Amino acid sequence: MKRSVIKPVVSAQEAAARIRKGDTIMVGGFNYGGIPYTLVDALLEAGTDGLTLISNDTAYENVGHGKLVSQGRVKKVIASHVGLNKKTGEFYRNGRMELELSPQGTFVERIRCGGYGLGGFLTPTGVGTVVEEGKQVIETGGKKYLLELPLRADVALVRAYKADRMGNLVYRGTNRNFNPAMAAAADTTIVEVDSIVEAGELDPNHIVTQGILVDMLVMKGDSYYASRT
Image (cartoon, rainbow, N blue to C red; front, side, top):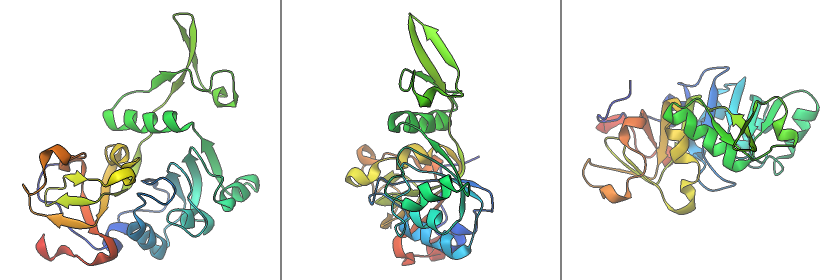
């Protein structure tokens, strides 16, 4: 069980070692913004494969987690948009990778359900389209809804702007995107940050993700290590 205590600060390589072959990972980001680049690069260096990747998009072939896809480390992608990374479509068409597309609002709500321990939610989005295929349709109040199931991961790789020593997180601008939702929906949450301050230094009004959801911290570029843990 996660606890609100001083969080370990580790190298990106130590963090990447927590991810095993076949794990399901969530990776924050929207296009270029909010991707935990240092953590993704360490995972690439580790050579871990057979991954299921849950991310809003698959970036570009040589950008962030897009490299996990293009280098063949991913067996399945669950995302809302994949058109910018040509390898995603190529591998799917060739049968080298599974692909599950989810409308963006549905995608993030499935992650929220995973974080809040809910069994799913009802949405009219996708009724009567290919999105409906294989899903339970529930009619209530004279309207049809799809039952969308929650998403969870073994590990979430999250990008935040600043953390305190207890793992409370502050985000910057649109880099926030999917990161807070993903931080709550994984068994292990690893966060890449620009800076780490002492507990009590963050304005409580600016804290978005509470430290109880965070397992370990990694400094962007690995300029800060575990000497203060």
